[in-house]
Image (cartoon, rainbow, N blue to C red):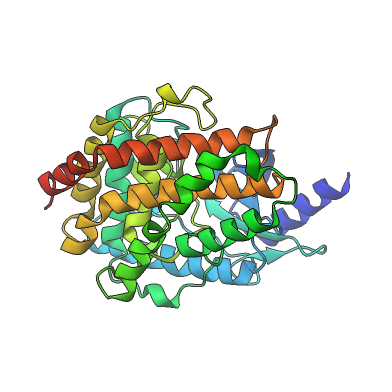
Length: 370
């Protein structure tokens, strides 16, 4: 048995699964944590499954703070779901504590492990195969906001400081541009100008928050379709997963990141920018579903700023790609030269498309106000 297998066995022994463990296999398509599906065999029923994860020490320096966030949010969600007559075990993640009662287990080499019961009869989609599926994810993330409306966001830890701080992303971009360690700035003049002409935009949401127009809420911060478990029969959202980036934030960021990711049909590194466009129909479908799921829990100002959420999350992502390209491709993995610059260009094309159709986006948002 090698060291990795020994650590898995050590972690398995730390938890009481309620029945003998008959196997643990690698699972899923995540790139951050090491994930395994654990099979157990109770005497009186069929196999019961669990998700076992070793949290990434590189991504998350403070697993205690991370798990404090997750346990607090999942326990609160569970109570809210039960209060409204829902199925707590299907509609919210549940942390299975190790035998020592802590939120996670630390192995003999310092690795941090956690366990969640497997949510059966669900499927995880990597991309939206239809507008209906994209809308279903919108309802799920909107409902997530409604359920957590009473949670004190200020008590959560920032697991990744300044994650959606667009002003800070701009500062880092300017620092990389000034250093220009590989002399790449000369290759991306139009992209640099694109950012600098939108410098004021980077403060729009944060200024609104500082002015009290946008409240701090519990936000997911990674609202991709594959972070919603869908019912395998109805294809409606059942449970929001991957809560590692749950932090205090602005609801328009969660909405905007979904639009950035889902309301277009191009690859993230598409080189033919004529193929990169905002799909306004998908924007409308998601907006209607998100506001339906939120059930009137958002303020009028938050709803009005939803298009800004889409624009800022897309602009921020493009700035990050451009910063990494100038800096030497240290953060985002690349498979070819210039890939981060191409990624940047697709994001900026989406931003330009949003700007060109801004009045349409505002009309759609107003149309679906609850």
